[in-house]
Image (spheres, rainbow, N blue to C red):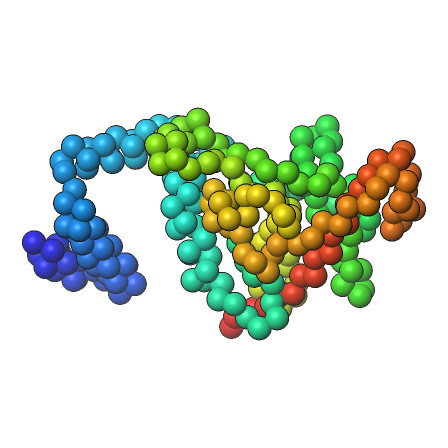
Length: 240
């Protein structure tokens, strides 16, 4: 049967679409044969995808979430952003990038404001490429898990928690746009991040300083402890 289905796409005008569809057919049919999928299981899968469609809105994309927890999002990133010598590794975009986030000066605060742009900001490096900002030290957080994807995680014994991270989108003239995170060294979720976004090169040490320790810019933290982390971002050349 698979040969007949493959042949039905043979006259697809776009060669790339033909390649993708025929590969999809081969893998789907191979999967069905491998696991001996039952009709009831296939119907359950259809119901799952239908539920994912129903819960999806302009603010929530359950299919992206499904792609994330299956590792498909990160695999796509890996395929399209092969490691370049010396360049910072890429990871998933995630749902938190917001156009029009407020611009802050080097050393400014990335915190909540009345515009609800929580923990988001636009920064520019100085002439030497340096940048710095203050924000709350990241902690673990869950992906949305009140829908079908959350039910899937529950049924398979997986946690919806993501490892603690800070997210970056970096650009520069003639260079490739980079989307990446850094993760907190020692976080117990580094090996079980819900969307498989952790890479060893992106795990950084957040050096904790006790209250009263002078800060790099001399600000008064009223005796509170604080952490410091360094993240040097290296962008790869833009592809021609």
